[in-house]
Image (tube, rainbow, N blue to C red; front, side):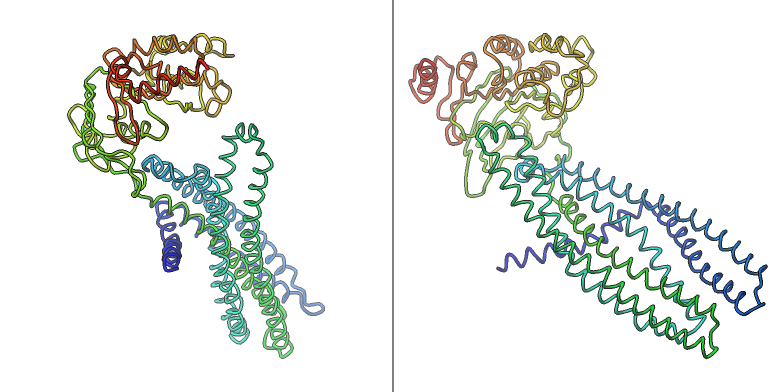
Length: 592
């Protein structure tokens, strides 16, 4: 129970910190803020002057035969001029406020994207990508809308209240005091509702993020959903998520929608009281009919900003809740920065792992006391059952994760003393899960070497046996690839990923089931190309099909995070151990 309370208090402190952090982000755009305030001042001054001119015009026409047409026309001309100036000020004010909201939102998105690049892989593995997308898009949009409303209505509202109050005090203190005494009722109602609204907007943002993550998950796995006939279950889960979102949204909307009618009721009461009192004063001759008209206009103007500000406060609750989620992402712990004086060089291909230990969860060790010495140019194959630590070992070599114990050395230097960018630039990776960016075929092949010449790109595509299918595409190398290669087959996507590595040709290679989606005939050709590419390059090959790694210099057989066997294919087969059992079982299964 105390843990839940601590979490609640921690979240509350983060939300309280959101407003000053937002204000700090607005600070660089003070010129826009100053211009916005100046235009708001002009707009408010115009709104305050027009009732006075209207009141004077009324006084110029009270009584039979006492109409001063010249004075009335002067008032009308002034009203038209002030209205025009107010319209220009309103346009500039709106432009400034939109600019401020855009710039602050842009900065937030840029910072969030930059933050994601610096987050450790462990964070990205533990958080749904859909939730991150929701924070960067939906939450920033909601924040931007709230910020825009705040600047547009808050400035003018506060200035209107101050200006109206000052002029009413100058006209009649007694009537003004009635307005001032009744006004706190409106503030009390707005504050009471706003306190209860904030937590529902927080829940709305949280559930919306979960919903985006769920949609993203199903979009990526729609084929599997259909293959297993889980369409109804998916719809049911989505309905449940929608129902949960509906509940928190309904509560948020219900309480926030109470604000406007509640404050409007209070404001109408104030207007009625002011009308009654000023009418009594007018009958007694203490104020003119024109002044009575001015007071009624000001009573309406004075009350209206409170109504608008209460709506702004409600919207700002949602905006701050969304900003809190973005700041929560920005506050996440980044991966350990590069060491001071970290190495930036080209590897000689020598890799040494000494007493390496690693675990994803504190109470579940995965790799323990793992040692390996890889000489330059060696081909190291890594095999073993699912979950034995093959892919984890690759993640450690690339420093996507840092070891918990021991060390990994490249070129006789601990990789923690390498610049990450330099270390990873020494590896060329082809993974089982392909990734292509939206762009042309040419851009995707040249992803690791953007300055590559056309001849180099074509040569790499030919080496990867991708050139023939690329030529058949509608625009060849200029064909646009849709998101993650949706308009290509899985095998074609993998060939492009192989071509990408063929072009860069770094000193070390990591091939994780690199030919898993390619037909047997093409695979034989690719294996021949890989054999040529691996000459003189240190290579780590993760394979489930053991027939593909028979030519490896050393085959490491892993089980439960340990090397249980090591040697060439011939040596391991002679031992008749775990590797021989795995190898024979694969071929026995194929024959069966």
